[in-house]
Amino acid sequence: MTAPLATHLRFSRILLTGAAGNLGCQLRPRLKRYCDQLRLSDRADLGTAAEGEELVQADLADQDAVHGLLAGVDVVVHMGGVSTEQAWGAILDANISGLVHLYEAARAHGVKRIVFASSNHVTGFYRQDEVISPKDPIRPDGLYGLSKAFGEGLAQLYWDRFGIETVSLRIGSSFPAPRDRRMLATWLSYDDAERLVVAALSAPVVGHTIVYGVSDNPLTWWDNTSARHVGFRPQDSSEVFRAEIEQRQGAIDSSDPAARFQGGAFVRTGPFFD
Image 1 (cartoon, helix red, strand yellow):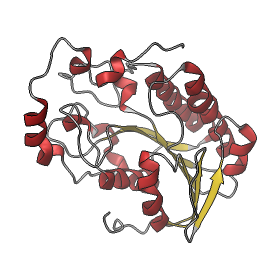
Image 2 (image 1 turned 180 degrees about the vertical axis):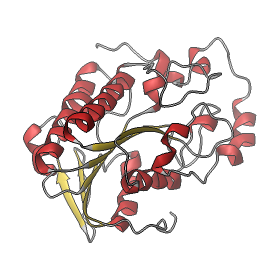
Image 3 (image 1 turned 30 degrees about the vertical axis):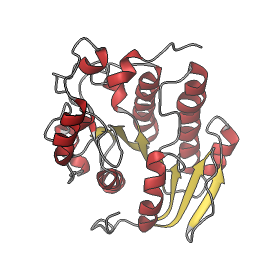
Image 4 (image 1 turned 120 degrees about the vertical axis):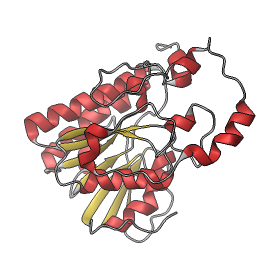
């Protein structure tokens, strides 16, 4: 893990939801550098609180619990919710109802900025031979991607009506290293994920901004020019992994929809309504 970013950013209390998830676990020690108290929330067990941590086990579907979660919070880094294609009921509870609960609680408690973990699957049905920007129309690759598109729409509504700023992060593939040839384009290192979140928290004015969460990969499908005002400057690259991945994976089956569309395997995941 890298040293803290060169920033004077400091909050009294940051709320990190989804703190037991993949990125939540990575952000947990990193975000503590930027606040006096870090409130951590998840449905899952969060272990033992370290110095400066507050642990709250809560379900996003529980409106009262979410309301209490936002009390005394300066900003929210919302990584909570369903992060894969699942049956509609689970997505509805966490990513639709749960997000409404979060924004309503933020409005009630006067929280003025949210960093929202959206997803690249909002635009998963664009082809891999296309380069798109946050300004292009959505093309979700499933119910999960559709729920994240709803989240972006909700963020826009709460900015327009209530002045709550949001940076919606269309996160690519955040792992220690890319796992396949698709991830050569979508990979977001953990250090760049920190840089992205800190930029989203510290940019002076964001309104509602959408930005793709991706490292400085030579192969890319996403153009973040329209979000440069956020100040995210990735420093890592998937290029160091390219030779090993191409040798291991070999030829691509162009008849496979997962090899044609940016959403990868998500474009053929289903059924939706089990």
